[in-house]
Image 1 (cartoon, rainbow, N blue to C red):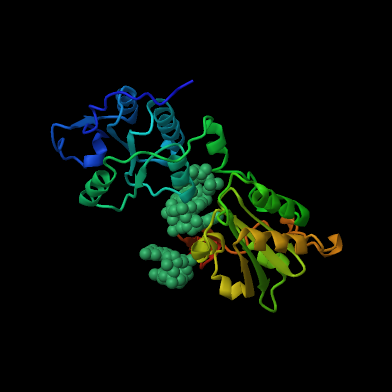
Image 2: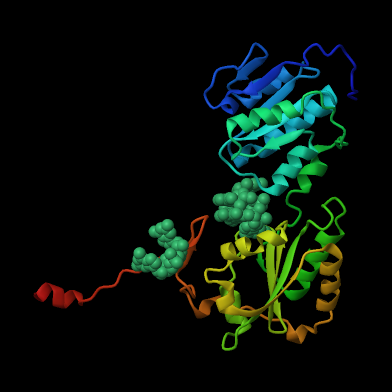
Length: 310
Ligand code: C2E
Ligand code: C2E
Ligand code: C2E
């Protein structure tokens, strides 16, 4: 329904920006107009042709709404518009950045770029024509950000199915779907015990056990971030729990390993230890978003009775 309308681009120099982008500085020239909200900015931007539109992203719950606004602007206003997202305070997941760029943003400026660098980046896209294809339906793009709804332990065959579904999903980036890692416990630790220390937080992070190995699939994790992710997932250094690790991160190598894994007989599939056996976690630790913290347990040195007696 919408078509790229070629009209005089007399608004080429205009810069419409969320006020937060300038970090408290006033408008930098007559070309700048500042808006208190992305909503107000979006409404004004709907009548622009070739202006620069700078949204601010401060919380990750704004991502979807912002994606919809960018998608609408790009589809309805055409390719001369320069659409920028400035991260304020939060750090976006790579999948979120891909979503915003897929919806038609020219650029996402990271939170740690200082204002001066941010302004240089905005300058750098002046005169640019947006040339990537933007799908008509935004749902196509949104479904790519969390294709796997599972988290945590899965039976061996469920795990294999879930990972092959990811690998066969052509909407997801080639060789960028995640990392698979197989870990063998150190002598003296059973695989079922090692499993109790594996606590993925993020939806899309799954694991299974079998053949004395723990196999993890971390959705969208890049191989250079593997240690960061494993530190989020295990409360102990993985070197203390596992003696051997194998890593796969390219689509065809992950798929080939899944083919091998499917050959394992159901008798060799591992089962988690029954939960009822221990109410207390193996390690009394919680994750605060940055690191694992052991939770102190109060300990009384004297019995109540003795205390009262003294
Ligand atoms: P970070 O925590 O330093 O993680 C860097 C990268 O390691 C992540 O990049 C991701 O590829 C991988 N990674 C880390 N932990 C996990 C995990 O538990 N599961 C998986 N599958 N991958 C993991 P990404 O996704 O681009 O995120 C960039 C940064 O954004 C993160 O850096 C973190 O600071 C922040 N972030 C992303 N998601 C969340 C979240 O849900 N909560 C919080 N608190 N921060 C998040
Ligand atoms: P989720 O994706 O299932 O992640 C659940 C929890 O795992 C997060 O809780 C956080 O404690 C941990 N986590 C996951 N990935 C990372 C990471 O890369 N780094 C660090 N440090 N921690 C990570 P949190 O932060 O309370 O987030 C709850 C939910 O909010 C998440 O569930 C996700 O649905 C959403 N969310 C949070 N941050 C982001 C983000 O940057 N991008 C997107 N798309 N969603 C996010
Ligand atoms: P880390 O600093 O290498 O400390 C490792 C472990 O030594 C801690 O595990 C804890 O059991 C013990 N420990 C170290 N310092 C103290 C201390 O001052 N008092 C007591 N009672 N025990 C101590 P934990 O608690 O699981 O912490 C794991 C990691 O989390 C720490 O490794 C550190 O990197 C971080 N962390 C924990 N608490 C804090 C904190 O209060 N401040 C900072 N900056 N980091 C902390």
